Image 1 (cartoon, helix red, strand yellow):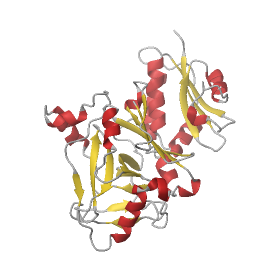
Image 2: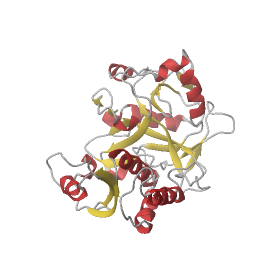
Image 3: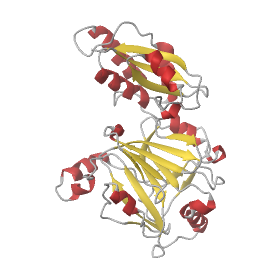
Length: 349
């Protein structure tokens, strides 16, 4: 049986990449080549420097440890690199149990595997894309094997409505302007922004939004300016905390949601033979596990983007055009659905 290792490399821009391999040095060399064998994320980010390596007895255990490290904010990964000194081969049970226990204890201390440990300051709640009135773009999602939830949400005071693709832990929302939904006084400027997002191909504005929810580790004040929005459709006393500056009109909308998703409620709904059908996508996808936003200009990345990236909420890259890449179930099926040109969206599951 091949021995696997978990490793972390530092990119030329300081970013950290975690992976697994049976031959770490060979794998790093592959990352630096242009033959397609290396990770797409690492293209153009060399030279790569190995900063962490730990041998484990099996691929399954390697994947579990890799997953936990990837959930760490960048600051905690740096702490892991600095404090942990790997020795020997980590095994799952019985052999070298003490070493395995020490690694788990370290991960607990760093807050990546226990509800009692420190959580990231924000968690991903949902993502949205602005589409045309009535969301005819939903057909591209249905063709790809996704179900559109039966309810249409009206955002009174905001002038928009939406439909969703529901997953057990998060959801993808298609938002559109709806003339039948009232616009509150003072929201006219917001509606103009929505119009620009709807016409993103012509306006250059981002059609994307990333909604986050607070965790026990959310600070009372973020390390960048924020502002609040309260609209009629929100629960009484609730507000959205906007992380994208007002003046960045073309940037993705990053925010802390006013009405976070209730995963416990979703589990109850999923158990209902009727209501739970909306989670049973024909393609088998069940959980939204990652999101990546490609922006055509680095100037359109708000300060909060690096904060969310470090927290493990989302990844941000610069490319040729606006694109959202959503990963479901950690991509275990190995399927990629490119929904362009109908939607600037790639689904991996």
